[in-house]
Amino acid sequence: MLRYVIAGLLAAFLGIAAGQLIAALWEPAYAPIAVVSSTAIDIPPAPVKEWAVQTFGTMAKFVVTVVVAVAVALLAALAGLVARRHPLRGALIALVVGLVGVLAGVARPGDGAAALVPSAAAGVVAAVALYLQVRWLQRTRTDPADPSRRTLLVGAAGLAGFGALSWVGANLLMNRSAAVASRLSSTLPNPTATAPILATDVQAPVVGMPPFVTPNDDFYRIDTAIVVPQVDAKNWSLTIGGMVDRPFTVTYDELLAMPMVETDVTLTCVSNEIGGPYIGNARWLGVPLWPLVEQAGIDPTSDQLISTSVDGFTAGTPVAALRDGRVSLLAVGMNGEPLPIDHGFPVRMVIAGLYGFISATKWLQSLEFTTYAAQQAYWTSRGWATQAPILTGSKVQVPAPYSTIKPGRTAIGGTAWAQDRGISAVEVQVDTGPWRQCNLAAVPNDDTWRQWWVDWDATPGWHTLRTRATDGQGVTQTALTADPFPSGATGWHEIRVLVE
Ligand SMILES: Nc1nc2c(c(=O)[nH]1)N[C@H]1C(S)=C(S)[C@@H](COP(=O)(O)O)O[C@H]1N2
Ligand SMILES: [Mo]
Image 1 (cartoon, rainbow, N blue to C red):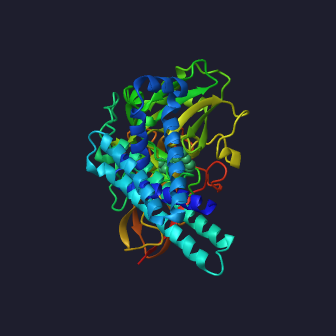
Image 2 (image 1 turned 135 degrees about the vertical axis):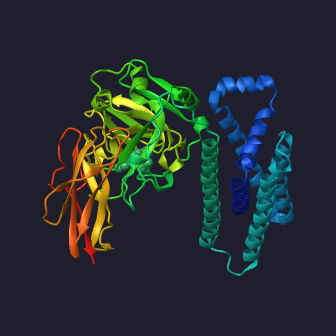
């Protein structure tokens, strides 16, 4: 008996998972669960609905889904029991349950015949799955050796695992497409404070230099997410709380309605090695963070702002840094587009001059004022620093490391950065020669990297090219080498090239 009930339940599970998966690949709005539960919500008369909303509040829809799920499970069990004697009749019940989903689709205005397909497919898959399972159970039964418990368990677990995988896959796909759709439909407002159009002189006149603005697709990506969070902007909100007098919440639309600024900021990862690639520059559009959160009335003894992502990642930003007038944004736009999903859609933080792990939370969900004594953020609890200003850095990018170039007049070029302080000088040393001052390209502000270049009369043989930068406060990069852990790598970048 029990094995037939289980066969019925497994068949229904496989069928629904198949229907969800087909809908996920095609049109998430037609997912059997969504279609049936939203129609079921419409069925009860108005007084019943009012009572339900009053009793269950925002859980009302969930309660309806549970009721539908229980009903489907009971019918599936019944189908299994009937199939024990009459496999075809049992399969027919499964098919009829699928028909209910089809009817629910018909009842919904405006969707057309396509809305029926995933539910119909769910019914067919459930019917076939039930029929095949029952035939298998009966065939093995007439065998001299009744199938062992083990065989049954393995079979059932296999089917359940297959269904669960399809189900999880369907959910991931549906979330993904909801996030993609909401990103595509998001129209960014015009900034009230516009960054100047970048003149060509931000680019050093040297062939082979990276672009001053990093294209979104080339922008480095660092996060702890195995599966990138897929957030539907419609459902997004940000809460500002903790040690404040007046906690509050903002939605995506409310944020978009606030005055926006646009500005260029270079992000850098603390784990970037000397000469490493984890640095990128973009034009961000967003709401100034500090003036907004200040409205909550912040307790003066709070020294840390913990920002949390929808995936649980946290960053701890020093409140003192936020107070000092530097650029801090709740960013919604990156290089003229809504934030790419990989870079934190719908909203991320961007704070000039602090490494990303303490300042640049993507898929932002909450901001909580607290203290370092009370709470540790994700990387800090793993030993990384609490105070992590971006250290002055520079790298040689032209010529490429270990490349071979022709003797004679050529150019050495690269970038240097000291976000929030700016770059005032860059020097280059060839082998053990004198340090030479480089030309500096223009910059829109002190928060971006700065390109530099210098002419070089290259003589045959192997050469070492070394660089060091001086920030806007006159402090030159230290020659002392340090690993990225716990607060950023130090030392001068050098490369080798062959001239011949
Ligand atoms: N949610 C979330 N935000 C995050 C991280 C993360 O792991 N999860 N990593 C941070 C780190 S260490 C860096 S350097 C920057 C990188 O931003 P990017 O991936 O857009 O370049 O994001 C920060 N924001
Ligand atoms: Mo980072």
